[in-house]
Length: 334
Image 1 (tube, one colour):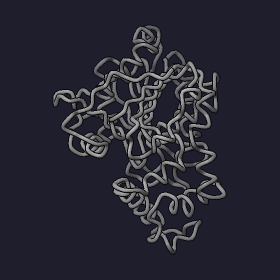
Image 2 (cartoon, rainbow, N blue to C red):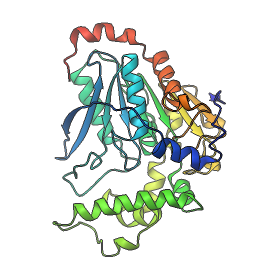
Image 3 (cartoon, one colour):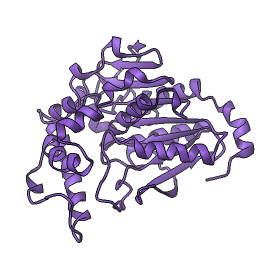
């Protein structure tokens, strides 16, 4: 279902970039106290988890965006909203994003659903009576949607949501190499290059990093680093295999997708069309909101934004807290 949501952007933040930067850099997110856990993976690597909220309530798994973490402002805002309402939350850091380098040469990427699947399988085994939901932002949103399309009705998730998703990774990489969006590209690629240099400062890298300093665009970085490290033939192959737009028609559980047409990370032409949106998806498309922005006109709404309220409403509709009654009788605290 395509729904043009009742969202009114802040008039004092004209344009997508001010929306994006205010939400990410200016607004003050709440302080969240997490309970850490290191989850060992079958391949010998690990992901770090950050838990918060009621250990017996329905659990919402949160996936951050590219180079984000549990401390990202948008994650903290949502986690605080969820735990205040009574949900449990678990933020899964992608490999190497918790502040500690991961063990293996490989890292994470926009189409990597294996770690999410392992986490959900672990949670289902550990907490069999607990209702599970998931929400992903940007890269994390692409992972959530791709995962749901891959598994169809076989997923253990009851409901999901995705925000500001780069549905077409090739189109997103091209958009981020244009105009002001190159500022975001510079920041993100620089962060990935710095992390890569630190990781292989004392050990030999499995790929040639001689020209790492020259790879300044997503296309270049993904061609020379992401693709060879993760088994893709090229950046184009990685984008083609990992773009969530190719998977959304197979999603079967209630899924909310929130996106702005002026998102500076993706051209409007790459947003899925109405005929691509299956009945299980509520696609809330707004004209203005930037990338994970969606700031409302009133300053008081900045810390209790439309986005958090909309996500919370979705999970209250699909995973009501009444699901926790039996779970609290059996769940082991994390």
